[in-house]
Image (cartoon, rainbow, N blue to C red):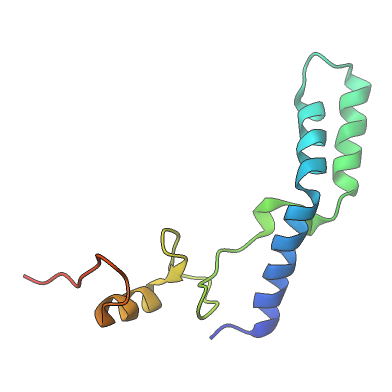
Length: 101
């Protein structure tokens, strides 16, 4: 089980990304538009830099929904490798069986 502080910090980041998503996307569009004057693009970059760092999508860490483990994350199931194997062995994931030969 991961520390609850790191899980809560990640949840806070997810919430902040949703809050600033539209503003961040608009500023990125302005900053990347080559047709606009260079001064406007530069001002957009400055405004983008003023936004909180945790509002960036790249700051979010993929974590297991059950344990909060950050390593060995399987994105299709939003579980860590350990919990995925455990639940699959118990038959709690539909259509998944343990392979054997």
